[in-house]
Image (cartoon, rainbow, N blue to C red; front, side):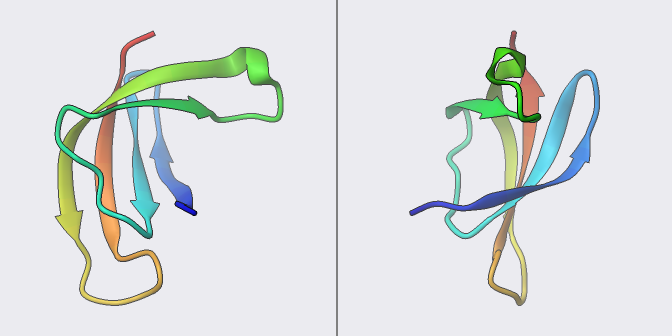
Length: 65
């Protein structure tokens, strides 16, 4: 199962660390609070592999909704 954690969060997007690589242009639905009504759709705008750690990828996401 894919797991991700938020590194940075802003009005325009977020940076994630994940245990799987995300694809450029991929769409994601994220719930960033305990209230599911705060779900937003994001698009992956960049991806990089980290050198170490369990979460070995970072991705920049742009908010769409």
